[in-house]
Amino acid sequence: MTLPGNGLYKDYVSTIFNSEGSYDFLNAQGHIGFKATPSIGLEFGHGRQFIGNGYRSLLLSDFSNNYLYLKANWKLWRFHYQNLFTELASTSANANPGENFLPRKYMAAHYLGFEVTKNFTIGLYEATIFNRDTSSSNSYELHYLNPIILYRAVEHLLDSDDNVIMGLDFKWNLFKRMRLYGQFVLDEFQLSEITSGNGWWANKYGYQLGAQYLNIGGIDHLDLRAEYNAVRPYTYTHRELNGASYSHYNQALAHPLGANFREFLGILRYQPGSKWTAEARYIHAFYGQDTSGENWGGNILLDYTNLVNLFGNEIGQGIKTTTNLLGIDLSYEIWHNLSIDLNYLFRKKKTANPSSSGVDTFLGIGVRWNTAPLRMDF
Image (cartoon, rainbow, N blue to C red; front, side):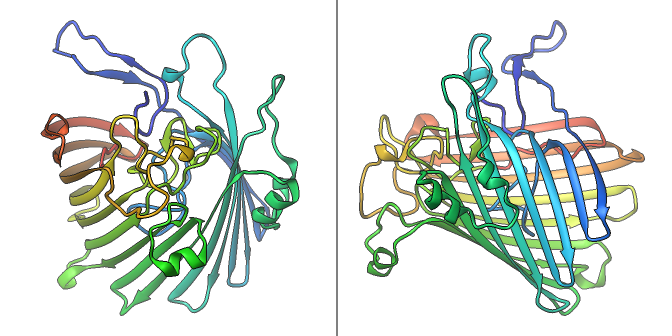
């Protein structure tokens, strides 16, 4: 019970148009920031973060609803270090009936980037999701406020079962017009089980590989992106239902498909003038859906103790499903940060369950002021 990328929603009823299946929602974000020193910047606000160089991020994306955060950026020589402390919601308002406050959970994350050369950068990422709910209050684990300690070490120190995610990414600029990038995310693993190739359920990881080609054929602002993402079943999940899964407001903090998927996407973007922008996207995804009462590893909100097989797990297990999506967007900036958009979306879903298969098309026009486009690319 959630509207992707947004918070509380309500049914929308119009007396003029046929509004069946329509929703009304509010999306607000804002922050304040300043430089504490020439090398340290602080930011406090309500919004979303994104770490990576791709269209998707397997580490931390801006797919979920907004959340409260405190961020610190440190820059020294070729190093860029970032701390992020957040308060998250274990469920959504629409799934929390009555007048009770949303149950809270928290995330502490840090990212260390290093500019190896002018054109090559690598980065290390670590995040922990934890929940300290008691019968009387919600409390933040003060140990995680240490800006430099490894969270896995804190987890062992506290003898906790907090959900720690680790990862790395890279960016490599080539020949002035080419950019290669990628990510690797690691949730849990056991080396002996990986080398055996037996599909142990707790070998939970994912990876991304992508490339960008800028100014195709010497045409300014004509850019092409190709990207591949894959995440094994049960990645990002936890034994504590929602309380420590890598999610916020019942939405993924990384890829919108959660886990148990492979995806390829291609994006062609062209800006013929300072006010016009055109973009075409093709996305092909293969993933496994859960069968009735069985957890095959795609839904990161489910408790992983209720899994189907200890061994033999592979991407696409469960109900094998493919989606093909084509999106075309045309935008014109009327005034500074005020744009009018024309959108077309075609989505075809095919699955072994005929009742879940189908084709959806959408044509929309709207006005956007100082916000990013709202897309349902999944």
